[in-house]
Amino acid sequence: MRTAAALAAAALLATGLTACGGGGESGAPTLKWYVYHEPSGAFAEAAAACTKAAGGKYSIKPVDLPNNADEQREQLVRRLAAHDGSIDIIGMDVIWTAEFAEAGWIKPFPASEADAVSKGRLKPAVKSGTFQHKLFAAPFNSNAEMLWYRTDLTKDPPKTWNDVLTQAAALRKAGKPDQILGQGQRYEGLVVWFTSLLESAGGHVLSADGTKVSLKQGPTEKALRIMRDISRSPSTPANFATAREDDGRLAWEKGGAAFMTNYSFVWPSANTNAPDIAKNMRWARFPAVDAGTPSKVAIGGFNLGVGGYSKHPDLAFQAVSCLVGEKNQIVNATKGGLLPVSQSLYDNKELTDATTDATVDGKTVKVRSFPYADVIKQELADAVVRPQTPYYNDVSLAIARTLHPTKGIDPAKDAKRLRDAVTRALKGEGLL
Image 1 (cartoon, rainbow, N blue to C red):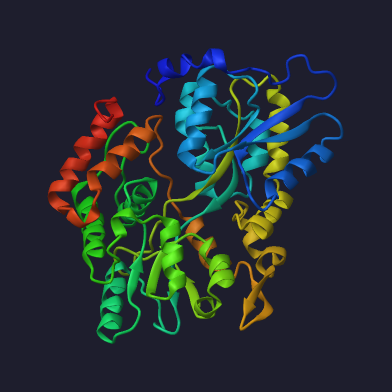
Image 2: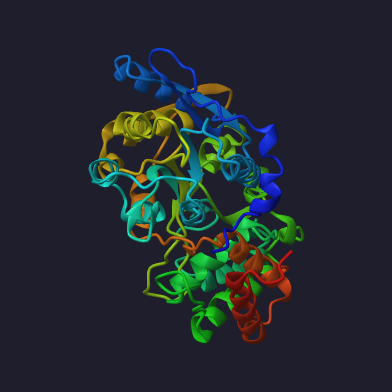
């Protein structure tokens, strides 16, 4: 069966890779945790805490991967395709589970460990780490996009995408800031937007088992129509076709925007860089497609898996159980701004009452770190997982390439083009 990575190319690199994970070690083994460099130090703190808790059985050493998810995946695929035994624990984007599991690059969690790392966790987060009814990756942190708005511009946040367009038009007519910010570039962020809209409209990209294309005409056309209309709105910036999450953050802080769909990192950033904007900044659930039907947002975040060629898998599973524990989730949240995966923590005062320093009118003041906890908890509770297939990378490329630029979408025609493109992706045909 084909894997989603080019194994033949990766095999050529095998002679340049080392499989040194524990060979020749004396005493307690050092478990290598391959994960992106988390700048606040939260991951390093978790590794140190779990090393201490292990009581000499093992130590955990973080190994930095690039911050870009595509580059992380590329490095990991090359090493794992070469059976690199130095990889004990893997920090995994939630979309990698099926691909890595099908290829044998991560091991399924034993029943006892699976229960320990999934009990009380957000169901969509657990689903993101599951493949063929087995848990292959433990939920570590989570996220989802919300709608951000300004109380000095609008009293009641828009509930639907049509409301967004209507309110932006009214602000534009009144000569007030009216920009609608989002992610329109041809990359994964565009796939997240489409998936969230499609699921909110009652559709799905693939069948429940991930083997067949769904993309029913009605829901798909609804999603595509919204993407087209938002992209063509006079309130949408001219650079929308190249915009990513950070472009939205920067534009928001300049003060010209009324609405933005983005992740929670924009809150501490605005409080630091644009306190005059932040004082009127509020949050709401991701806009719905149909009035009266709550939106469903594609879940983000990272999970932890155990390397398929680790020399210490039993210890690695124990280490993962510690790393994803609630104490470390709180550190991740309060120190690194990474949202928890345990449902109960969204009601935990240690999280909900946490504060950070911000400068307002030249003075240092305390602002709440997670004032949006109630809204994001509701979103995450019924969030959706992007298509679960070993060929996700190909499916994602097919979606992004078919729909970009979104300004040119023809809903009826592109619904069919999209079905054809995703069908070819599942068969591994002609995407490169």
